[in-house]
Length: 65
Image (tube, rainbow, N blue to C red; front, top):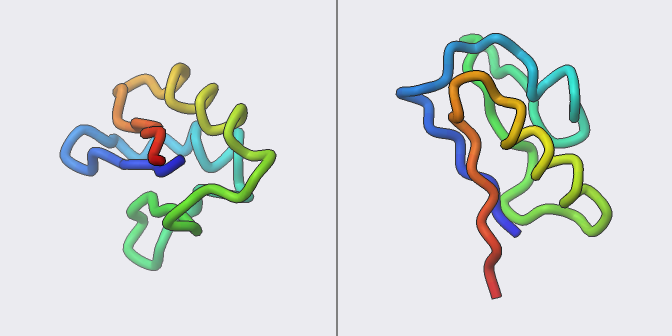
């Protein structure tokens, strides 16, 4: 699985960082970034939940094969 952050839609509210800090964090400029290109096993459920609760719908979880 891969995570895509739609930065043009992100308002930097931090819901993703608060809910799943193992994956999401703020960079030095305050922009939300992802720590991994591909998610480690076991974090998929949390990331899917974050994509559902993001108030701006700025996070997409993509299933890659």
